[in-house]
Length: 124
Image: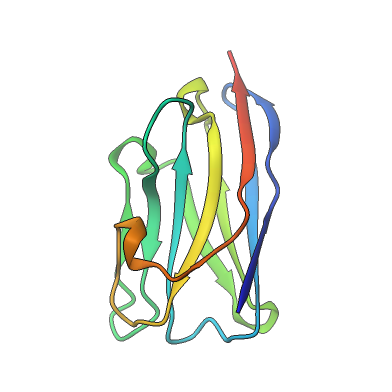
């Protein structure tokens, strides 16, 4: 099982980026998926998490609610994080994670598989 995150970069405040997380070795169905970020000097925090089980529960951190959206392309085994109206405080390394569970998880320790992280820098 491998996850490959990409799509980070430098963007001005108010701009948009779309992060991708390509999964290999497993199908997305039946896995809980999470996007996390770690800003300089801070702990890793959940950004968006969802389950692919019945109900397809979703979670968005309060500060990204309405600005970030998670989607997936099952055929490509890829999960996306669309980030709009970016702010300087969104600057962080973003990680995608997966867990063999149909339940939604928001704690990093609940995830077994992690991508390598992609840096997002938002300039003011």
